[in-house]
Length: 402
Ligand SMILES: Cc1cc2nc3c(=O)[nH]c(=O)nc-3n(C[C@H](O)[C@H](O)[C@H](O)COP(=O)(O)OP(=O)(O)OC[C@H]3O[C@@H](n4cnc5c(N)ncnc54)[C@H](O)[C@@H]3O)c2cc1C
Ligand code: SF4
Image (cartoon, rainbow, N blue to C red; front, side, top):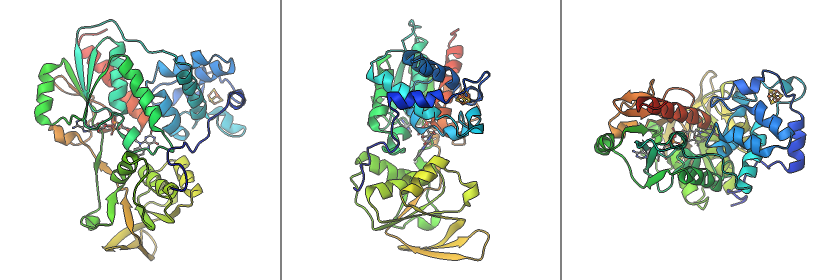
């Protein structure tokens, strides 16, 4: 390993530099940043608190709205949300809202603040299937409303893609651990290593007042031409393996990543950080239409990933793949020891006998609700948080809450 895979790449603010960054904020009236968070967080409010060194108030604003505030501070594509309309952009550059949120939530952790509290008992209980961000947020919201919550998670630890997808150099495991412990502290019971199938779902429907399914879109997809190729591996399978082994994997000499989204960028940067000499990312989309966030793309480039845009694979023979340009008469042949295919994922809901297409409505059927990536809309952590909150509201209403 050339670089520490577990060390956060982005440096944290210090007490001095955070005051400088918060000092750049224009304290806008009717602030644009506060209107564009999918989870309804109010950055203008917590930045104002930071300006007055009221870090507890800032943490209360963040945490009261988002049980995964420390996670979102690190992984939220802020360039598409709160920072997009930041008034400061007209002067120089937008305020680093994610960075300020990270400072505040780190401060919250270091000083042992306890902001969220369990609500008075309703005597009703809810089962949540899937311990990813949607399930975790829904659990926090329901516990604050006084419900008993049991979370059924197929993996050894909860977190979903926060633990098995997003690499540690962007989101260290201990941050996920702290967020999970806080929710456990509210009374959530975790039943890990339990995969729920159709029969188990039927049991849960009878044993609980309501069931929330938040199983994500974790089924890997692979292009047909790579199906039996021993050198090919789906992007999420590769990243999950790296996460499981803490970066200690057998490394190829050359690797090609196929895809242009966040999973592709994460896989390519991870390979470079782990020490692979040549990493090429080939994407069907051209750079202008790239799906990956700008920050992810810049991180990949800063780590010397070669990015070739506009080419799609057309033929594969062992370690050799031929690509053709989508518009131009141009072909390309690349040889590699590993092909990482970051070409999309499928819903995991089919295994529970539910409709595998993405759900339009949070209330699926009877006492079953759905949340997270399996519901239509953005596939981001902050969107999963909002869908988790919406599902908790809908369950509360269904069970006769306020
Ligand atoms: C590589 C990668 C990088 C990403 N980077 C970012 C980023 O930088 N920023 C961002 O905002 N978003 C990012 N995302 C997207 C983000 O992680 C997802 O939108 C989010 O995790 C969805 O949350 P979820 O709770 O719906 O599903 P998941 O996170 O997928 O969690 C679902 C959980 O359900 C469990 N489960 C599945 N089936 C069963 C079953 N039958 N029984 C019991 N448990 C089950 C799974 O084990 C998992 O823990 C990234 C995704 C990937 C793959
Ligand atoms: S839009 Fe930008 S400058 Fe205005 S309050 Fe929000 S962070 Fe500050």
